[in-house]
Structure formats: C-alpha cells, structure tokens
Length: 248
Image (cartoon, rainbow, N blue to C red; front, side):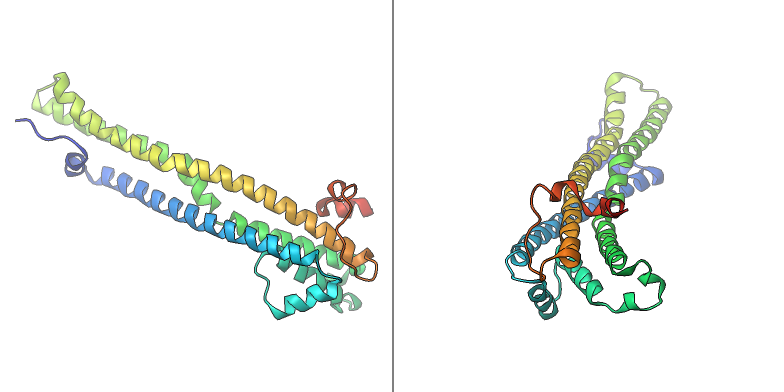
C-alpha cells in the first residue's frame, strides 16, 4: 500500500544516526543565525556611536576636553576606548619608574598601549566568526553524510521488500536528499554573513589604526594639545601599524 511521502514521513523513518545529523544541522543553524543577528545589531550600534564620538573628538579645542568627557561618561565604542587608553598612558607616571612596561620611554609606552587597544578590539570583533565559518564550511558535508546514510537505508528496505521499481525508489531517495538541502540552507547564509563580517572588520580595524596614528601624533607632537585632524597628505601614508618602523 502506498504511504504518504514527505518530511513527516522522513522523520518517522529516520534512525538514530540520521536524527543526530538533523539535530546537528539545526543546532548550527540556530547558533549561526543568533550570531548573525546579534553581531549585525552590535556592529550597527558601534558604528553610530563611533561616528558620534569622532565628531565630538575633532570638534573640541584640546585633549583635556576629551579627557574630561571620557571621565564623565564611560567609553561606549572602540574609538573612545582607544582615546582613553592613549590619554591615560600619556598621563601615567609608569614611564618614570623602572618597570619593564616603561622600557623605551614615553613614546614606546604610548605605542604599546595603543597597539594593545587595537589588538583587544580585533579580538572582540572576531568573536563568533569561527562558529559562523565552521557552519558555512561543514554544514554541506554534514548534510551530504545524512543523505548518503538515508539512501543506504532506503535501498536496503527496498531490496528487502523486493519492489525495485522507479516509483518505489524515488520516494525514499528523494526524502534522503532533504539532508543535503538542509545542509545548504545552513551553509549559504553562514558563508555570506562571514564574508560580510570579515570585510566590515577589516575596514573597522583599518580606521581604528588610522585613528591611533592621529592620536599618537596629537599626544606626542601636538601643539599645545590642540586637536586638529592630520592633513590628508600625511595620514594615509603613515598608519599606526608602521609607525614604529618609520621612527627607527
């Protein structure tokens, strides 16, 4: 007697291995979508806050005003945190001590403080991307494994029943292919999201690096702590990442 075929019939016929594969795919999908949504919202908020802070930063008269505003309200974005780290490093008396952190003088101490701030932000923005990348790369193969396992059992049942006609084979094999479709449904959004987040992080960290260079120049060579943007002919050619090499 003909039985209804479809996803419900597939779930009724699936064994423990197939169910484990299905649960794994659903778990990867839920985890990746959670990270995609939360990171998208967090990135949007961080961008708005950074724009507002930079507008305020370049609009004040001196770094003292920036310091006062940072003491009044806690930093809420990476640029504000980096500015606070730089100002606190410049004001710190640790470079007058004999600690290892003070080796090289004030300039080197400030360089290390800003570099550590950038590295901390890089670590923060990379959080969760490993899982998204894993879902994007592994989900198709997990789904394919589920399909192969399902086809294997379907063919065994067809062989035992002795009914090997096309109408008897197409249904069970088609149901087994559901696993491949689920694997692709998990992988495609994860791959697209990973590429989008990776591009955003590269641009974000590049801008943070450029801001660190501007901040370094303002603190070490600024005229009476006046806050003025670095001229366009200088800023693109001298980022903070190669600042140490240019001084040597």
